[in-house]
Amino acid sequence: MKVKSFKRFGMFAESIPLPSGHAVEVRCKGPLTIQPASAGQLGVMGVGQSRVEQTEDRVIVRGNGPVSIKAPENVVLSLNVHGPVKVATLPSVRLQVQNVTGPLIIDAIGDLSFDRITGPVIATDIRGDIQGRQIKGPITLKRGRGDIHIENAIGPLTVDAIAGDVDLTLRGDAFIHPTGDREQTVRIHSRDSVYLTLPADARVQGHVRAGDGVRVELDQGSMTDAEVTLTPGEGEGPVITLDIEAEGEVYLGPNPPATAPQPEYTKTTGKGWLARIFESLGGSEPRPTSQPRPRPRSAPSSVPKPGVSDEQAMILKMVAEGKITAEEADKLLEALS
Image 1 (tube, rainbow, N blue to C red):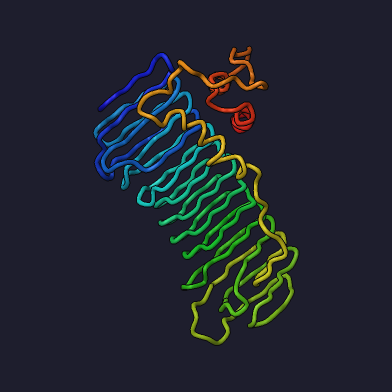
Image 2 (cartoon, rainbow, N blue to C red; image 1 turned 180 degrees about the horizontal axis):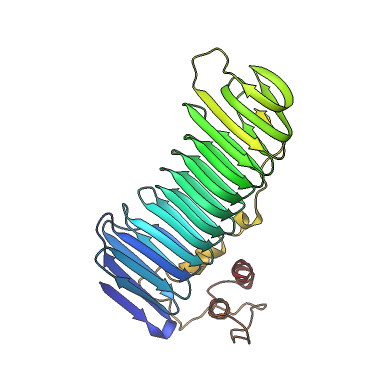
């Protein structure tokens, strides 16, 4: 294990050989970012009080401030994080998201499981199955190749371009768009409304019931009723089997009357303030301090005030050092509140 410690800057960096299939458990107060690494090496960088423990079957990363991890493929990642999390470009990694306070953004991952998630969730390009429970949204899942099984979610929930079966139990509106290019089963029990986007010529069978009525706009028939039983029309295309029950309304067809709301956090996460936070951790050496950036005019004071947490104090210090702007700090502080 190679360890670089920058006590003067409150930073550390470690590189750990990691065999395929090894488990990596992350327990930290975010922000946390996870990116791909070179084969067989786990890289950990952070600010504040952090440490890494290694056993025969797993590596445990603990942090009290921003942490950046570079993980090799074919490992199992387990997250227990309070703060923003971003995971990018790990299509062969199995990700177990446990007890995370978001926002949580995932881009390109293998199998994905959720447990006790609070905060907005966006997951895109999921190569394996998705399983989850106790998720407080909004939740957006896009381009999934496997099956989805989620229990006790609080939406709104968007499932877009999913190729596998869908099995959902939730409170909140559900916006579902299966690919329809193979046999699929869609089971949804919602305490609100369900909007299922399907081609007009989709072959659909099954049972749908809704407290505020079911509206069907498909070539095999258009109807509005409280309860509908569908049989597939003629054709050779794959059949989508439905089992939907909602207390609100249900729509089936190509033109749903509503779309899922886009949460505001998508405008401030990723390449914006979160990327800038970890940019200061990305080099093999800390940034030089002989020529610091000018302090922004509106920068918050770097002196921690009574009641300020370690994370908030760290953010204020980074503003004072010119590593992020005051506006970026405000957005980060808001995400951590």
